[in-house]
Length: 482
Image (cartoon, rainbow, N blue to C red; front, side, top):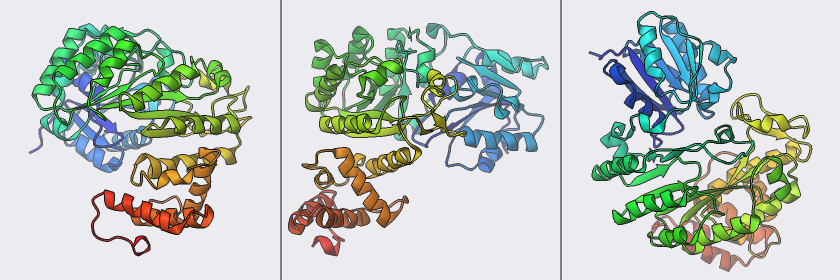
């Protein structure tokens, strides 16, 4: 027999491995409503009917869902089905994607929309709804005092710790004003008591947690706090531990560099948002950019700290031209990050970048993820080509399946972008935009290097064979590699 709950809090994540931190904050702060609630986690790969069926098994009076750019389409379908199957259920929505889109069809379908930090507001809303009180459709939640709310880390289950990334944070907000980013709307940085969070991390470690992903917008904003957190983990280090950090590459003082070098190679995964190497474009969108300091920081992270570096660039920023964007790609490739993520500019609800649309003739897709279609300096055809480039770079380069062979694509070429763009066109002509296996990739890469770049077939075959066998594949060597 199913156990019923008055309140069901729902998270629809991008993938199973992502355990929702927001959901756990809400559950941890329900107070006297906690005993009447449960949580349900899904991924965007789950169908709406499966999600709704699971929710309704608890016979809830209230269903609360978080709305993000990656799950909005699924949430819309889930809310429509809830309204059709259980019209008496109260639907409460929150999250960044709906907080600044409060007149949309989705928002209007909700009983109530909570805009902003909802930890301290959701319990009162649930209590009011269950008591038959009239609740406003829109509620602006003030920023919470981070040291007055319960921390969520006890809500991680043993299954979470064993098989999922554990999300943590020591601060909220970002002091920078990048117009394409939602964090530009919360310029006041709030911090948790360092003693509280480290005590929680200690408990997670005792339970066997190894992978910690910090969602702080700039982990190294406060050097003293960053040093204390890193020292905490360094003192308790054990095999298999990994820290994911988002860092500003031009804020790496000597003490921080020294401590980062003390970690085992590859145990620090560092995300650095470069976004553009064009100073004029960076200034236009409110992004501070010191190109030489950014390059120096990334070079340190790669060559001295031996961190796995994930670096981002954005195509379609106002005034960015194909020439300057491609020069930025070439510059970043030369710094040799573990991953280079080429993203297409998105018009997030509430982000100030929309104010640039008329001046730079920026057109965005109407549905999520609201990607840029064209600008006055980048045509739709060019941006479609960047999308193809980015997709194949992620599949071919970022996965590091053929680390010796793939760099031959742009070895000695004047432009890594143009060289790989040529390969991506060749790859798409052979495989389309669908997925492909390692053998198919080897075949296409072999043909491209030999036929299009005129590299000696014996050399190409030898390098590809070494890559193929390096992955532990001792049988099934393709005929063309023998």
